[in-house]
Length: 552
Image (cartoon, rainbow, N blue to C red; front, side, top):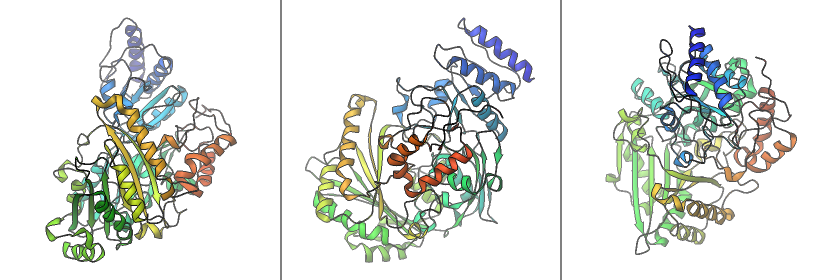
């Protein structure tokens, strides 16, 4: 069957030169494409031939009618759907661990760079684009989304293509008293989220998603399938917060589930008023949010712009792992300025709260990958290590009031986040950080001509914030990717590193994302992927210059 599929593929290639298409290649296979005149033609042809000969049929090439739909299915930042964005030579959807392994090996022998996509939420599109027009393939993990929960041992095995919503839904159906600490966006893929750390509403109690990984299965650059015992301590450490796209492809994660009460409390309070009033609440929040008991999460969200009369807005969102009587008592004692009343709080199950914070009507919507809105956006991040003065918060809110459509989100740290050592995982932002800031601007297609103006404003505001945030380095969260911090600028599908490249990365995004953990990440990269097979614009570089070794 594999030989007949390969033969049919070659026939399809010949037919496509004349504008024809070919489909129905064998049981369960579907090949429907025509040749496109671009630099990745030969590589794409070699890749698809390799896949078919190894029994992998679920892929799409650029001339397929479904190609654009499949490529854009998980693109949530519409900046990366524009015509100037380089498209992959192929998209492959592995349906099994062996399919995944074959996709990696076929990409290597075809001299294609590998971009692995689990959910498509990469802020800079690094899971489905490439820099410098290097030929590449997207390995999309959407079909690898199985979740197996063992409530008895409070663990779950989840494939990397599962979304946060799919994991939450499976856990919630299994037990009303178990949860997992990850983000609030239900369509974010676990592969990318856990690889970068994974901060969420439960993190002040149970720390990051990456801190709760017990085991993992990785397909490495040579196509080997490794678990925790066979991959070694350095690689297991690196994949839990060292960023995606540097180490191989994590096929699945074994996760520690955490205990939650049968009912939790949620709150959302929005206030609009003069700049000084809103600034006063934000200023006070700095002393409250990060210092509440571990069971409490209370964030602050400020949209940009102002009303016609100059008023601005702030919204405080919270989740408390306790009954609303305790939540109301603690918050009114710690933050009386908020003026909370019982009507502002609601009790619900943890799984219902996950749907609530994802903006969904019901928990049954959590596995639905189509629920997340798509938009054009640009984001940046910071860490604050000491509360900002009232006078300066007033000026910050005033600056925000002049901005285009966008927002800042202030997430409280402290609690358990401060009790994990900075080198326990690659994620270094632990004790000493009061809260994080996520900045963002967004626009729609009708405002496309204003995109650079919006991004320019965001960069100016980021510069304005420099005196108030972490320094030497100015830290950032790798899950909020920001290419403004620096890039690798690779011009080859693999190889291409040097001591100079490592020094450049260390002084730019390496130190910002990983602090003093960067050098250990480089050692892990050099040991496990010396040929730099897995690379992108902000991947970890190996120390030595080693070309691509195609021996398997």
